[in-house]
Amino acid sequence: MKARSTILLFAGLTVVLCAAGFYVASAAPDGLERIAIWLGFAHRERAALSGPLADYQFPWLASPALRKMAAALLGALVCFLALFGWGRYSARRSKVQRSKTDLA
Amino acid sequence: MHIPDGFLSPAIWVTMGAAAAPAAAWCARRSRAQIDETRVPLLGVMGAFIFAAQMVNFPVAPGTSGHMVGAALLAVLFGPCTAALVMAAVLLVQALLFQDGGITALGANFWNLGMAGAFFGYLPYWLSLRAGGRFRTPALFLGGWLAVMAGAAAVATELSFSSVAAPRLLFISLLGVHALTGLAEGAITVAAVRMIEKLNPKLAGLEVKS
Image (tube, rainbow over all chains, first blue to last red; front, side, top):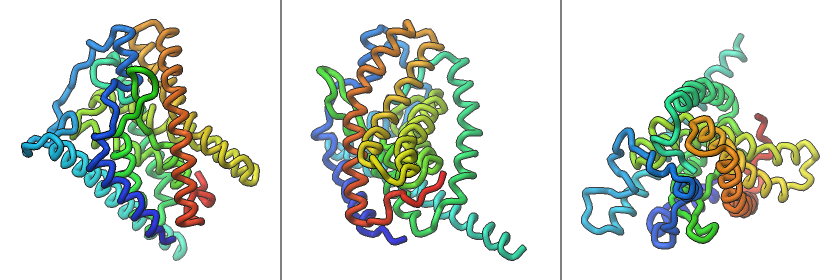
C-alpha cells in the first residue's frame, strides 16, 4: 500500500517540529517532574549515564538555536534509520518464512 | 512522563527491565507477521515524528506542561505490537543520546509509554472495529486519553512500590495532571488519524489484526 502523501506530510511535520518546535515549547516541568517537586522526591534524580546530546544540545555548534535544531534533527534521523532498518529486516524475514511455508 | 534514573528503587527497575525484554521479543514476533514492506518507510517516518513531537511540551496547567505520547496513534496505524516497538526505539534514542528518561528506568518507561500506551490506546478503537466501526471518533479520542492515563497509572504504581511518596498522593496527582494531558493526546490522535484518512483512505488501520 502506497502512502507517499502521508509519509511526506509527517516527514515535513517532523522537520518543522525539530527546526522550530523549541521556540514554542513550554519550558515548565512536565507532569511527572512537577509532581516530583510537589511531593519532594525530585532530588532523587541522578543520571546513570551522560548522553552525548544531553538536554537536546548538539555540543559542537556555537549558536544555541542551531544546537537544539541539530540535536533534534539527528535524533529524528536516528529514529527513522533504526525503525526503517528493523522494519525492512522484519518484512524480508517474514516474506522468506511465508514462502518457505508455501513451499512445504 | 519519562521516569529518570534515581526515582525507582533497584528492585523495581530491575524487575521492570527484566520483564521488558520478553515483552519486546513477543511484540517483535507478533509484529513481524504483520509488517508489509511497503509500509516500512511510513514506520520510520512515524517513529521520527513521535520523537520530534515528544520534544514539544505544551502547557496543561499553571506551571506544568505535557507532551504527546503517540502510542495510540501508532497502534491505530500499525497495531499495538508494532506501536510498542516503535515506542521502544524512540525511548532508547531519547535515553541513550539525550538523557531524556533514565537508562535504568528504560524497562519501566517501555512498559508505561510503550506497552500500556499502545495496548490501552488501541483498546477503544479495537472495540469500535468489533462494533462495525461505530463510535470511531470517540474511540480514537478515548484511546489517546487512555494511553496517557494507563501510562500515568503505571508510573504511579512503580513509584509507590519504590516508596518515593504516599501511594494515594502519587495516584491522585499523577492521574489528575495526566487527565488533562490525555485530553490533548485524544484530540491529536483524532486529528492525525483524520488527516491520514483524507490523504490515504485505506491506511488508517482498519485492516490491522493484533
